[in-house]
Image (cartoon, rainbow, N blue to C red; front, top):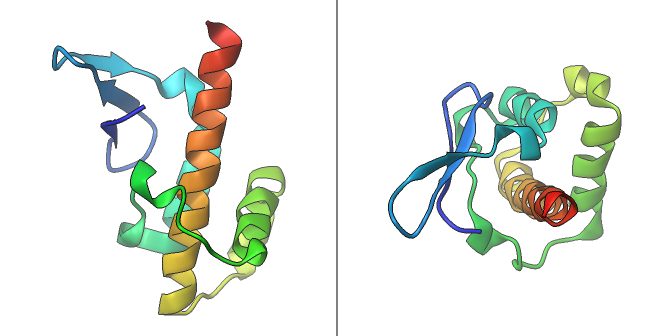
Length: 107
């Protein structure tokens, strides 16, 4: 799925189809996770499917999954710039995996 867009507060998501129509996919996205990562990554958060296959250490995937399952821990987090870049990659992998999983389940 390409051309995913979110509003600034990460509570509405859509994709642009091949006819340039905006299709609302908010109900298929991990909205709570996106809002939590917005708190952690501030304006550095992006949705970019091309990052999904970028290799990173497993710990970053663990952090994203931990945030998904237990979002309260983010209140304690302070991250370095390099860590943020790797978390963005892990976040995108998790986001697109969940999105694709939800689309397969509904269709």
